[in-house]
Image 1 (cartoon, one colour):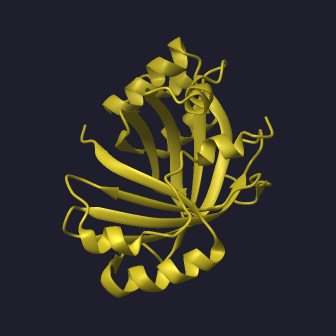
Image 2: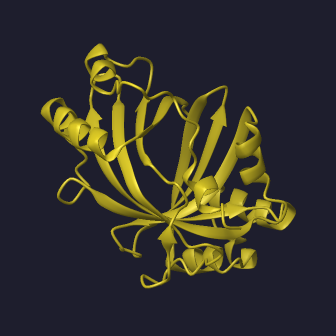
Length: 223
């Protein structure tokens, strides 16, 4: 599992407009974006004791969380993701789920995952069995992604973050979501061994600082 550096900054709408223009002048748009953006829906998992949420709030140095997600309303291609953070570095492991696996995960039915040949799905199955992992909330947002070859840099602008509250009807495009409490625009910068000075200079926003903002935590604020 490869680890990457990650910066997060909470920014304003004026900053988003300025960054959109500056980033677009030197970086490429992600090929999967439509008109420069896409909509992401994720379903996050947590234990009965809210282990992932509490570790995030408490700033635990080594932590992980599981989620499933799809893009632009396309439920025919759903990813299972495990995101880990250790010493400020992040990694992400992914696996494509079958339609049956998506339903099983979204409906908290680990028995239907037991025979999967995919190691990451097997890990989710074990942790649903042993740690009580269950779907906890839907997180929706819009993302504008930019990429830059040197340093394998990825810069994203995330906004319109919405929560499904306690709802977990992940596959229903019409399920009710509401704006997450006090959710700002989020600038994320990720890179491998080095961050080119050109990109470093572009993403500097006066008056902002590195943030530990979590979309999942923001979307759990109501319960």
